[in-house]
Image (cartoon, rainbow, N blue to C red; front, side, top):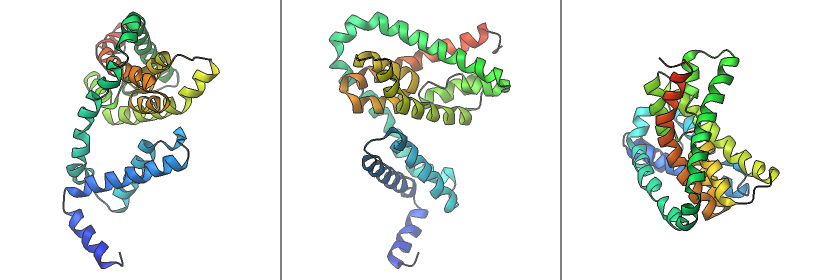
Amino acid sequence: MDNPDLAAIWVYLSTSPLLGLTITLVAYSMAHKLYVYARYNPAFNPVVTSVTGLISILLLTDTSYESYFEGAQFVHFLLGPATVALAIPLYQQISKLKRLWVSVLLSLTAGVAISSLCTVFIARLFGASLQTQLSLAPKSVTAPVAMGISEQIGGLPSLTAAVVVITGILGAVLGPKLFKLMRIQDDSIKGVAMGVSAHGIGTARAFQVSSEMGAFSGLAMALSALASALIVPWLLSAIGILQ
């Protein structure tokens, strides 16, 4: 760095937990500007571009993940309150939810079971190892829960996390197009589908469409995480993959 002020700032940040927090906020801010410039094209989802940028920065500066996370953990902590805040738009849809709760629960159960079984069978068809199959089984669940399930059943949490992000991105990109192709108009139906199949990234995309779609997507995301923790290990045991 030629600028002495910038060099001094970098030296200070590199030895401080503020490093992780600072580069996370800067990376996401730039990624969001790119997202707006691209007219909210899902292919430029700020989660994807910011993560790519952060990985590049850590590699170029030879910064360990542990050092980075000392500061980034403050953002990580806020995931909890952010998730709880999803209850607000859902409460605004409570009258409709009372009419649809049976359909929602059946859809969640079917979605979790079919997603997990199809993923495992396709992975097996292509010759994936048992550990890889177990890592892919909870791919449609929000990352923290998916990683926990993967670890408990003998999968690789790191592989599961990567697949979860890819699944969310694909759901956010392809979901609205599929709804249009299938002529699905009801935002509650679209929201449940997005929440079950594309978890957090899909929910963020759903809120951009409408508050109703986002509310049902957030509900589906949370309930599918609970359902997956209960159903996925049982399903894998039933088909003989998990002992």
